[in-house]
Image (cartoon, rainbow, N blue to C red; front, side, top):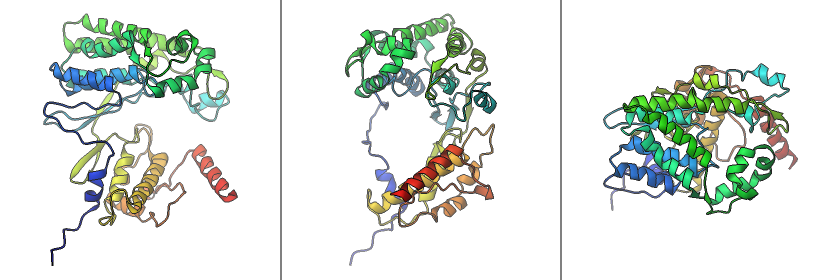
Length: 403
């Protein structure tokens, strides 16, 4: 009789099939992104002797150009990185809300929430400052060199993705009636560009070229990077953002509102480097951002799964999928109730990631799927959910009962 093989653990079950992405290997270096032109740009940096951080900055800046439906220079960029021989670090590239964006300010406008679109939703754009900070601290290239790839695709064009074309089509009327500068870029000739059309963004190219020129006035690499950052957050870009935000624009409330973001908000913002939130799983340390982002939700899911008896499940089996999905529901319910800016809110992250808390939450995973929003009570605290989340939960329950 053959010996029984060693009993598998949840880590053995999940780790080999943790992702549907193909596993790739290489001998020199590797770049992965969501667009081939950005990936190629990062690889070109590595082939020219740049390090991984130089490549990351070049890749990210190109993504801002070639994926306008997903991200842009006015967005955010949380970064998790690790230099050879060092410890993992996080750059909190999440732009802060304007100083004037108080509950009273929205109440005075007759609003009980922040509109999902328009100028009232605008925060400090953290992306550019974070890329420059990453380049200065850990990179080796000059600012103008890493910007060159994005400048090229913005000025000379890139083939428009199918998803980008569809997104432009969805907002065509809005751009034409209320966002003329966006229409000038994304509706050339007044029409939605077809997939594969060579799309240029000359205004973005000129902005990046001007920032690169500011950097190149300095012989010292880091001084040049800081000059480019200052030109964005304290110079001509901040001034233009402040001017634009002061003009009313239609938003998702159905009315036109001017923004609350000012040039002073940009001038006072700085990216912050901090230690990541971590848990041990599958023999590895998993690092994510702090609770100012949703990163720790994955850590909560892994901690919950780590204590489950799923050794005999097949990858992709109903039992394993059920455990993963139900754990995700519990983690995201905690995200909604507990996560926030730890500078301004009490976020009990240590307890949320503790094995003891995971054990409590694990007991809620039953044999059938749950449609309840069930945040926990770490340390005995009472969970707090936004009123709109509670209303959505009540509406969902009402609809289920009616059916």
